Length: 336
Ligand code: NAD
Ligand code: WQD
Image (spheres, rainbow, N blue to C red):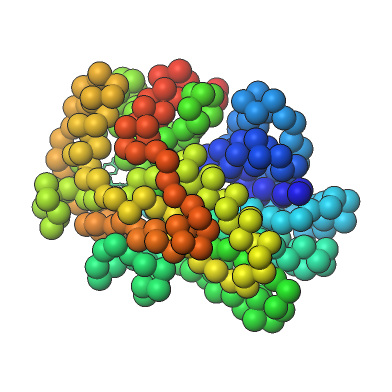
C-alpha cells in the first residue's frame, strides 16, 4: 500500500510516518516546510531503517499535485497539511481559510482525477467549541469559536458533500484532542517556532531554562483545582490511530468520524506537578487571567474509536511527559 502523507514533516505527520513505515506501508510525503524541517524525515528513516519519498510543494500547487497523482500509484491519502495556531487564525483568518480549505480542495480535485478516493483527515476537538457536557461524543453539536476551528468544520462538511456526490469515496474524519509527547527514541518531536502556544511544549521550555516561568491562564474555572482540564494524548497513540483509520477505509465505510483522545482529563496544575516529578526540574509558574477563547474542560468519549476502529491508547501521562522531556532535553534547539 502506497500512502501520500500531506504535512508529513510536521509533528503528528512525522510520527505517523514512523508507524506507517514500521508496518510496511510505502510512504510519500508532501510538505511546503512552512512549519517544519526536512530533518524530521531523515530521523524518521533513521528510526525505522526505511526510506520514504519527499516532495517539497505547497498543497495548493495544482500542477504539481496532478503530476504527482499521475506518476505515482497512491492507494490512500493521510491529510495533515494545514495551519493550526488558534490565536494566529483570528489575526489572519483569510490565510487560514485559503491554506486549509484551498489546500484540501486542490488535493481532493487531484484525487478525484486520479480516482484515489480514500482519505483520512486531521480534524480537531476544537470543532466542538465549548461543550455542554463531558465526555464529548462525536454526535455532540459542532460550533467552533475561531477561524482555525471553522476551517476544520468546513473541511469536514466539504468532505461529506464529496461523499454525497460520489459514493465511491471513503473518508475518515479524526478529531484529535491534545496531542503531546514524542517518539520514545527522543529523535523526533514537536518543534514549535518561537514561543510555544501549547501547554506542554511551554512547560518543557521552562524546564530546560529557555523560558523563565509558566503563566497559568486562570485558576477560577469550575474544575477541581480551578485550572483548565484537557485530554492529552501521546502522539504515538495518535499516530497508530491513523493506521486503524486506513484499515477502516478498506471496509468501504463511507464517511465516518472518530474522537482520538484518552477519555481522561488533566488540569494545568496536575500537568505541572507531573512534569516536575518526571524531569526532576522545578517549573516556576504564576497564575494570570484567563486566555481569551479558552474553555474550562474538554475530554473525549473515545468509545466509538475503540469499538469501530479497535483502537485504544497504550500510553499514560507519565510516558507523555517522559517522552516530551527526553525530546526537549536531547534537542534543546529542536531540529536546528
Ligand atoms: P504541524 O504544523 O507540525 O504540521 C503541519 C504540516 O503541514 C507542517 O509540516 C507544514 O509545513 C505543512 N503545511 C501547512 N500548510 C501547507 C500547505 N499549504 N502545503 C503543504 N504543506 C503545508 O502540525 P501538527 O501538530 O502536526 O498538526 C497536523 C494536523 O493535525 C493539522 O491539520 C492540525 O490542524 C491538526 N491538529 C493538530 C492538533 C495539535 O494540537 N497539534 C490538534 C488537532 C488537530
Ligand atoms: C491547554 C491548557 C490553557 C498554555 C489547542 C487548540 C486546539 C488543539 C490543541 C489544534 C488550557 C492552559 C496553556 C500556557 C496555560 N489544536 N495553558 N498556559 O487550548 O486545549 O487546545 O491545542 O487543533 O484547537 O485550541 O491547548 O495546550 O494551548 O492549553 O495555562 O502557556 O493549558 O489555558 O487550559 P488547548 P493548550
